[in-house]
Length: 531
Picture 1 (cartoon, helix red, strand yellow):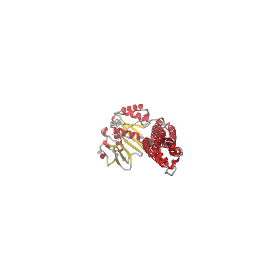
Picture 2 (tube, helix red, strand yellow):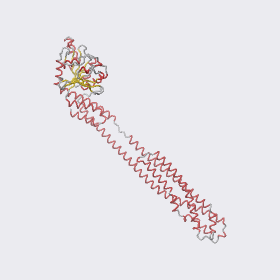
Picture 3 (cartoon, rainbow, N blue to C red):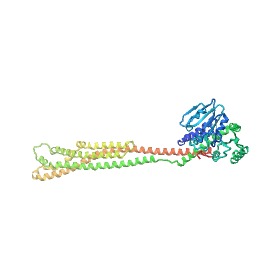
Picture 4 (tube, one colour):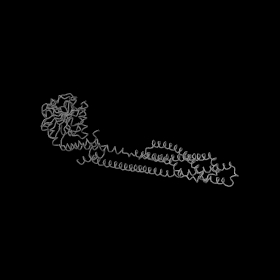
């Protein structure tokens, strides 16, 4: 039996959803260790239960009270006489005598514990209200004490006979395997033949009592058979306690077994939270990559447009100064060569064009800030990826703005001037007098067109080269963050695998525990206390 109790304890501790069964197990453990028998007297109201106890112990417990004002009394062995009243508010009151107990409103009392030196050893006798009581508190407390009872003594008034309530109660308790004795009370009020007739009727009705029914008359002090009943209980103490323990163990085992089976049938592996997170990360990663491609494409388009605008600014600046160029060609007082004469003009044209480029890049930066805001609002990725991407794009926009100062320092003026040199050289040659000024001016305009195209190509090459470096760094940063996301996804897969293993272990534990409990419960009739 001890092994079975230990298995039940291990089972309850193993599964969180079985914790509600701990109080029932603790009752079994207490009963296993305390070696006390609870003898609970039950029967209809005024069947003689209290009078029997008064006669047995020479007490004056209240009798002939109304069903709704009757109380539950526990009589137990003690060194000194004492009375403790357990109240419904959870407090305990000590009373000097029974008369003091009567001063407490019955509706406030849970039960009364009466300790007597002359009470039988290791037997607690409990007097209960009538089985047919309409008081809900009485019913609830009565059920609790009946549940705790090791032995039930059903007291039947010979004048009332076997009522339907009593018959139903006896049958229910027999079906549950409870230890029950029948006591016929007030036998002094009926002829012996009438008492025997009722006794024989009860033996036929309940064959379990064919060996005898106990008969008493509390009024006449004829309680020898009840005293004999107490002696039988003492002699059969170990057998009665074992029967009760087996009954409680079987009942708890059956209830736990049913709960385990329901849990096993309903057990499902739930991965929706992890799978949902996986899907969110994968979707956001795809959306992020798509958005970043869009941003790069838009920047490329806007930068190309900005370069065209810058080139036109460069070209228009020189167009407006064609006459100055023409006059410079005919100025014989200038000592420097043609390229040196035109270099400051070209540098000024480049500065104007780059100023236009810078203004357009600022508008690109404003567009980038809008895109960054959308990224922050629309993405909430692991490791705060949106913040990292935002930081990358800010640095990206700063690098683009730095293009202007970089281009100004590295752009090859000589290479841009190259298309203009041939026409200028010819104009300065021996045929200059035979060439009209308008013809030379036209040639210069054509050369400026070529020079602007060369400038545009050079500007485009410089911008693209620098952009490639920026995008390379940008791509590396994104790839780093992608690896972070990939690691997160790997961790989620590991969590899924771990949860799958835990679920399999849980099911395996359930199945093994059910098998063990079925082996234990198999030797008993599986009756739940709730059935």
